[in-house]
Image (cartoon, rainbow, N blue to C red; front, side):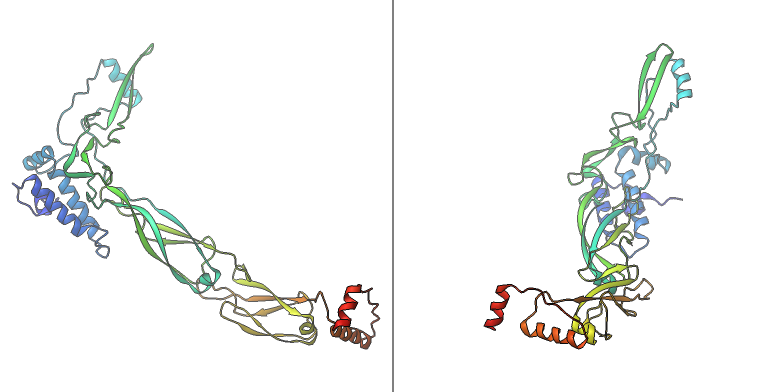
Length: 368
């Protein structure tokens, strides 16, 4: 059995319209799902409060409720649609004509899901991060608390369809009379419209509000991955639940590392002396610099593998970092460097025929 609407709003049965409105506003503020996010019963309680107010704030529906203890979506009032001849009834039966005294009031409707595209760095993807984002979304109107009406307003039978939620047009053709039934544009098929619409939400019951939300990015996310923030989408209609917010991750290009799955690739420059003699060099990683040994006689394009220095996956397993050595050859040599290289070539038995030097280079050598 449904609860007593007067008990729901905590008002006496002889309460005035103003007392009912004040009781509703007080309870709506207290039990609004946006206020009591940790209370799993808040949403159902809010729907019950809203339902009680919709009935008791409407004199016609309240009178029916007081008399019968129940109420239909749009009352029990009869409407005259001006139906025509039996031929129209026959064509209505074949072409889907529906004759109803009142439209069925729609129930709660879940809010829409939202999407937010977020760009992060490769370091944030590797170690996880916490980011704050600003999201504009439709929420239950804070001015009318979702009723869609200003103070003293309410709902009334749609004057266009007279509560049926449908409009009809008749057309006479050579084959007879045809009836076209369509959803009422003024009330959207609900059969009722808001009297004195709320100036904030214009009668929709929802208004756009910008919120700052916190997104926790887990270590190991990949480009294009979606993070779901449950209940952070748009507010529903008529007490319906919230939608979800989906944050789509985009990883910005890195100036040094290239990601392929869980592995990273980098090209590190070394001198030709380091390549020939070997040595050690500091290689940057996502965890900080790492000392890496360069083998003697390293060739251009040789690769060193740093195990476990790549990207983690969502289970914490890490890939590797592949370092490709880029041996740099000096474009210009000093006089001493040229002599040293020529001596090196003679020791190795290589016959080098120096190219013709420019006069400018000879003058530079004389001035050194």
